[in-house]
Image (tube, rainbow, N blue to C red):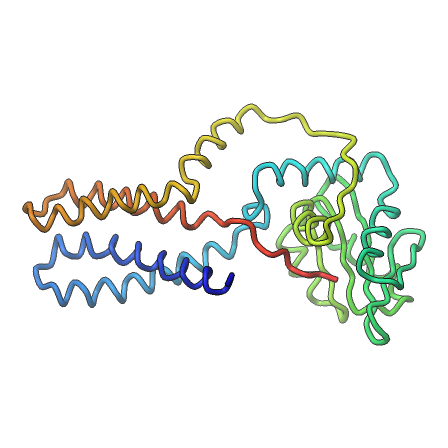
Length: 266
């Protein structure tokens, strides 16, 4: 069912882009068939470009605002109060029976041939290449096939560097950890510390509300009404501009990712 909905969302996005391109193509080109051909090709290329750009977004964008706040507060609580190893030990025990708590990490015997390590590196600065080298060296004796490093933040350069090791190294920042561990395992630590809320988020909340998915239908319907009106009234720049703006709003709404199935990391 989720795959069908995913396919329908793709079709709808391409459909919106097609009409956006068609409005302006039709304004400049009289031939309907040429307009349709150009619009189909252009909408496909634009969708591929937007899809490529959207995949570059961080995991934080796929979380709800409340989940982002919880992810930040969870990291702060684990980093300040201690006892993170006990938390990750019980988290792993929810799914795997063979779990060992070492001095600095958790060892999971997934099967006879695979072993995973959860290594909390809960510092407030971004994890760097030296940290990855030290962690990989410290768990090398366990001969793990996968190392999951839980951290606060990580740069794309460090993620690229971690891919050069023989074993698989996953770097999970506070948002990825929330999505792929806490939410996936349905196991959360107690929040004992909270970040002070930034008052500027009020404006962000208004923007998020204005472009939520349930607003997309209204924008889309309004754009179609203007587009249909243009067939009865001489097409002018007004219809092109207003319809384009409404279609862009609808595309933004449908591009807002809802709740996704967290990636399985263990």
